[in-house]
Image (cartoon, rainbow, N blue to C red; front, top):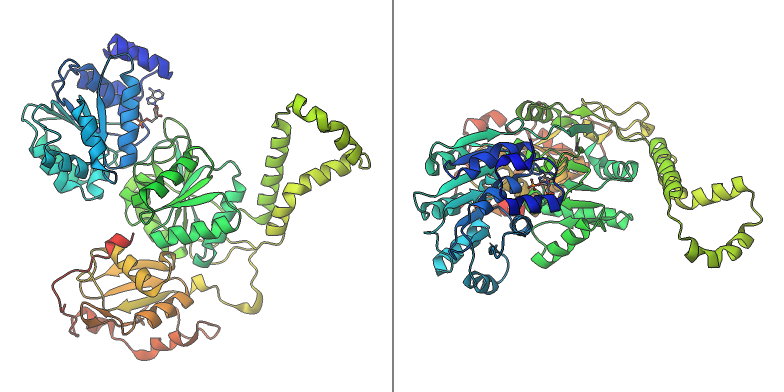
Length: 590
Ligand code: AMP
C-alpha cells in the first residue's frame, strides 16, 4: 500500500514525500483511512516509534478548516518533550497547507508566552493535561469548538496521575467531537476512558497488546548486586557503538551511578526529577546530538523521550511492573530498527523475570557478562575498524607529514602498528587484563572462572530478609516504600530486593550485608507517624545468615537471634496501629 492510496490530499502527500517516507507504517495504513472518514472514534494500540504521530496527525490536518480560527483539535500527551515533538512533526506535515496554527502548551515554563501564542489563534493545541486545564480555567483556551480530541500515550498519562485532569478536559468537550486514543498498553484505566468518552470506537492493534516491538531482543544477565556497576561498565566497553538509555529505580541511584561512571571516564549523564528543567534540556540536547553515549534515567524523567536510533535500553534491576518495562524498552527498536533491552538482575529477581516474560509474551535470552578478554578483543577490532574507516584530510595533514615520517623513521611497520594500537588499547588491558568473571548462574552461584580466594561466601548468595513495622498505611506503594528506605537509611535502591508490603509492616530483601546493617542502624528508633520504627532480620526461611561464620557483616547478624515472631506479626499480635491519619507521600522520591 502507498500513501497515495490512503486518501490523503495533495499537500500532505507532498510533505510526506519531502520527509522521505516511502510506505505507510502498519498503524498508518490501518488508522489513516478510518480517521479520514471523520466518523468514528478510534482506539489504536501500538508501541512508541511505530509512526503514530503521522497516523493521527495527517487525518487531523486534512480535516481542519484553516479559515476557521477556532481550536478544532486538541492533542493530549504526557510530557513536554512529546508535546514539542508532536508540534514539530505536525508543523512539518502541514508545510504545504498554508497557515495552520499549531500551539504547544506544557507545564514547567511561563504561561504568558503561551497565552500570547494562543491569542494569535490556534487550530490545534498540543498539550500536557495539567497545563491545558490551567488555560481552560483562565479562559485562554475554549473547548466548545473542538471536533477532534486525541490522546497520545494514554497509558503513560494515566501512569503519571493525569486521570482526573483527562476526565475534566474530556467532560468539557462537546458531545459531537471524536476521540482518537493511542496507547502502547491497555490497562483497565485506559479502557475506562474509552468506555466513558467514546462511542463504539474502531479498535486497531498493531503487534501484541502490552508487548514490545518484534525487532527488539530481550536479554538478561544474572550478577551479584555488588558487581552491578562493574558489569554495566563492561557492557558499555563491550559495545563501543552503544547509544543507550539506562534505567535505575531511584533518583539517588541515577545520580550516583552517573557520577561514578563519569568519574571513570564514561560518556554518560543523569536525567531525573531533581534536575531543573534547564538542566534536563541540556542533558537531553547532549544526548540527542550524541555528545553523551548513555543517558542514566529514572522512569518518570525518561517518559516521552523520543530519540531514534537508541541501540540499547539497560535496566539495573527489574522495574516494578511490566508496563514500566514496556515503556522503558520501547525507547529502542523504533521505526523498524532493531534494538536490545538488557536487564541486569541479581539472582533473586529471576522469578520476577519469569513472570515478566509471561506478561509481555516474550522470552528473555540469557547473556553472559563479557569477560575481560572478550572486551579487549572487541575494543581492538573496533580500533582497527576506526583506523580502516578513518577519513584522511590529505591537504590538512600534508603539511605535517614530513615531520611525522622523520619522527617514526626508526620503527619498523610492525613496531609502529603495535605502538599505534597500544595508545588506545592499553587502557583496556589495564582495566581488564586480570579481570574476574562476574557471571552468576540463575540460582546465584558464581561463574566458573570466578576468583574464590579466601573461601569467602559471595554476598549475593546470602539472602537477607528484613522485617520493618512500616507498611502500606505509611507509604503509598512499593515505590514509596523503596524511596522511604533509601531516603532515611542512605542505602541505594539497588541493594533492596523483593518488597512484600503489608498494611502495617513489611518484609524486604537486602542484597548486601553491609546495606542490611546500615538500614538496621539508621532506621531503628527513628519515628514515622509518631511511631518508633523497628527493623530487624526477619529470621524466616529466607534468611541465609544463620551460621555464616565467614560473614564480615558485623554485629547486625546477631539480631537474627532476637527471635522476632513473624507469625505473631502476621496474625496482628502486636499493635501497629497508625497514630495519625495522614499517609506520608514517599512515592515522590522516585
Ligand atoms: P512516531 O511513532 O510518530 O514517533 O514515529 C517514529 C519515527 O518514525 C519518527 O522519526 C518518524 O519520522 C518516522 N516515521 C513515521 N512514519 C514513517 C514512515 N511511514 N516511513 C518512515 N519513517 C516514518
